[in-house]
Length: 82
Image 1 (cartoon, rainbow, N blue to C red):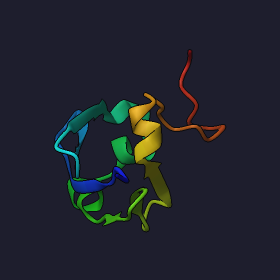
Image 2 (image 1 turned 180 degrees about the vertical axis):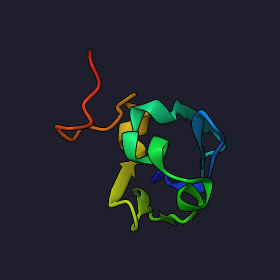
Image 3 (image 1 turned 45 degrees about the horizontal axis):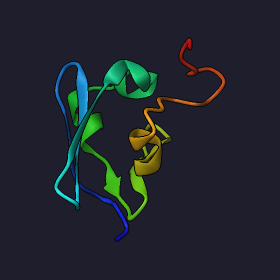
């Protein structure tokens, strides 16, 4: 079974991703600086694909595989301290 996002929501501190296998993942927005800096309306404006989530206006892509592996933003500017 291919694990894909079913729904995506954000609160003030976390990104919540419901997966098609019934799990819900919650990760800190601090892992994704572009999402942390975005407005609630910008965070809602995303597209789901079989492999992840895309925010066109912010040029942000988050894969389900990365979330399951506990990875945040892996771009050079957004890299978290280990």
